[in-house]
Length: 389
Length: 150
Ligand SMILES: CC(C)(COP(=O)(O)OP(=O)(O)OC[C@H]1O[C@@H](n2cnc3c(N)ncnc32)[C@H](O)[C@@H]1OP(=O)(O)O)[C@@H](O)C(=O)NCCC(=O)NCCS
Ligand SMILES: [Zn+2]
Image (cartoon, rainbow over all chains, first blue to last red; front, top):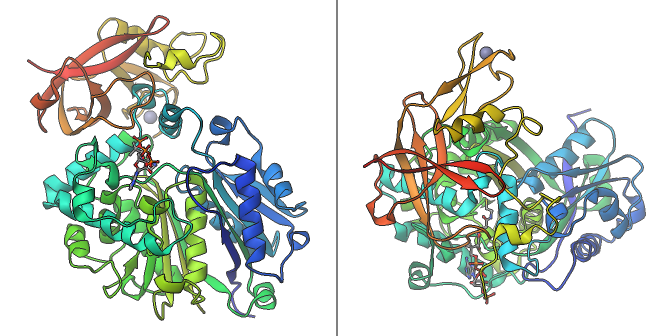
């Protein structure tokens, strides 16, 4: 018998946006979409369930979300159920947890739903909730949220490597234009360089269009042991490699040079080794563009280009169709929006449709290898690599 | 309409869930001496008496050797700005734009993030020196802000 392998066998998603829906409405909708994607699986077949969600306690005043979510998806788990929370990287963490549960033999099939209810009636409360993931006693007490933190990352990268505001903007232009073909994205209108460059300032040098959008949304996948997977679909999407790392907490405990993320480089190397591939083998990637600068640094640390050349990489079209690797064909966090607990699962949904040639007009032709990446801090990264075989 | 503040979000004075300012008294917090020092205009943190390890923020157990024998030590009086930004959008309730956030490096090899106050955003540069500015917070609490060194 060969080594155990795990694969995606179903994937579904809700419309991302300012939804007229509750936390549990979003879960039910993602559950239905997931089961609709594979008629060989019904909720009664699912004995293990994981919910990925960051702050339902704040946005819906709802704790204990795993049994609630399972019930709203028609699942009564008898083998494994759990909530996974790792801030913005929760979705990828949840799929890794499902992978671990299957590899350990506790179960052979897990449903993972990622969800976040972000848009609450009081708009400013969204920014208050955004403070909850940082260190409340030593950082959030000053109102610190991701935009100023990543603005300082951008300052550091621009200072050290000469990256320009236009190069940052080009990431947004690319991702907005990609999302024109994604009916589930929050934004689907595309964007021009001028639109991005003249959008309102948030935290210098980041402007509105440099930032991922606050949004509601949910996504679901089902993962299964290879033998089971093959009985459920003729095109399983295999998990080939994965890695996770956290190098410090809170923000000021990360390594001092914020333009360089050695922990991402380390984790990527590990995931590539596990998958038996290198960065050049990646055909399509969904990476964590919480801000435009993040995607530029991720090109570098994931090994798609040399350190410091991320700005030029996007400028040269190397992260777009026809380039070295298509990055964020869905539109990424910037255009899809970023419902924290759902994002990593949305990336897995993109892997599922890309590696089964079901991505329609945004299909990356002949894609064999897909890389998904989430971050929850400058030193905190979560990676999953998927393949067709 | 008056801007809402974090205080307005506190439905009941006994509910502190939306109040981001830490609890600073001995009945709530084991690093309360930090805040006592802060009230005396001293910025301090903990150093391990057993292995010499120093961290920011302060701890009650040394993360290097697990000793609980820690002592308080003052920060150098000035820090240097590694990076900064001026935030004008996405500002949480209870905070007023523009907010000048800076990453501040000290000679003890520690870094702090804090807003600069009493500071014109146009006057700030990478490498500038800053000094502590203690600010009062609601209900007898204090926070450590910084300002440009004149
Ligand atoms: C940047 C930010 C502060 C802007 O928030 P805001 O001032 O409340 O602005 P809004 O979200 O209301 O956006 C204003 C409008 O611009 C649109 N918009 C926002 N971001 C956009 C983008 N990147 N591209 C295109 N349009 C955008 C919105 O849809 C909205 O349009 P509408 O009024 O028609 O609905 C907020 O989006 C933010 O905090 N983003 C980062 C989230 C984050 O930190 N995530 C975690 C990352 S680790
Ligand atoms: Zn020690």
